[in-house]
Image 1 (cartoon, one colour):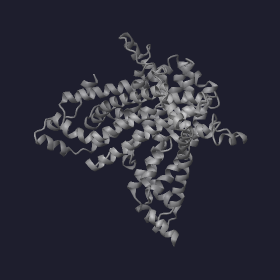
Image 2 (cartoon, each protein chain N blue to C red; image 1 turned 60 degrees about the vertical axis):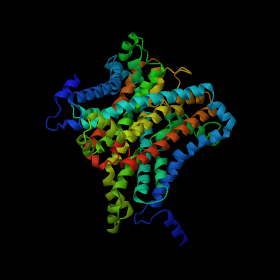
Image 3 (cartoon, rainbow over the protein chains, first blue to last red; image 1 turned 180 degrees about the horizontal axis):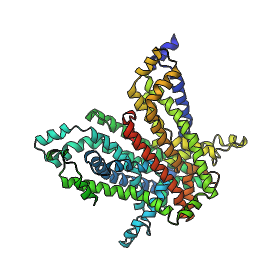
Length: 284
Length: 294
């Protein structure tokens, strides 16, 4: 009796079997693979103690690496927000030859292993590469500089913006635009004051997803970055370097800082989505 | 060029009134910019992989791929995917069943936790297992005493791969099964089907395309994962190198053609994944609820 009523309190009774089994398996597997290992990072950081933790986190090389990671990811997400929205708009609203292929190609960065993307981009933008050659004649260097990092992160982050904004553009009612037009709005006024505000939450979510992915990205960046400490060394690479020196304390501290920042981002994304659903009736 | 082509073929019938669409010139310009961007940022990297891979001829390409260390890397990648993908498939089914077919408190939080690996840097995904199993960890000495190798061995690589591909199947199934509700299953059960029969004969046919979709994406990531695997692998040639790691090693040895040869296989995998994914979306879009979310 007591057991039955306790159960009713957090789950509604159902005739479908397997609740205990599937939820139990889910929780055990989730704990073993994800939660316990992640808790290990928090645990090992706590072991360091407050003073030592901040000493590592505020070490100039660490700070610079974090700055480079977050700075380049921010720039790349900004570029992707612009071109991602443009691509999503073109794919939903216009019909042109090869549209389906372009639509499918947008997911390439999801499907292409990051190491492959890394060496491919390096081959293109290195001083003797297809585009690198032209740029080096103009005195511009992209590979082996922070600009190369931004380039790699643009590649990695593009689908996040397109795939977040695309379904929202599809959902916009034609009536909204017709109403704006019939009330005398010019096309650019409709776009800026009617369409863009409705798309803003989705664009923001896409930006945040691309940004979060860019901060943690490793494979595609290390080939093109040049990896010069204080100049083009990203935070994930510094974790790898510390691990190779068996300096687990430093690696853990940098990881903890990155995790903290990423989870704050995740929280913000969720809040934006909840707000967007309340405001516009559809989420991102 | 692309601009004129696109201008020429804009459908005359579906031409919307001027007030609710852009002028043809603006449309052409936008399409042109979009195509240029895609060509430069997506098409060219793909192209360069194959051009570089075959730059010394077909014989050299085949020789590079049949090199023993490379073949060992291909074998290891297949083994790792063959373990990691089924594990996450079973997990995805269990999690989706529990979440979609039942009401309980804390469900939204559970879904957030399942998505967690996607917001963790691949390098940190590897690091967590180094902290768990490495020397100086809680489990490290015990494992060493019993002669069990996890880090710098295949089990560590499998674990890291399972971690990074953890949410793929679950997040395809959960929204779809939530949308489908419990009506079909309740009908089957009331007609006397057992729980297992209900799952196999009612639920599974309802979700098979979404399941395949999730497995496809999960497999692509499992075979291509670099950062997490790089941290736990130890880079022992012929033993703990997966294909992406082999690409890195060959590239860092300035053996560019061989590196691109291995990379071309991974690029081919990506292309096949994209084609199958597009076919699934076109034919069974209704039965893949979250297709646009990727």
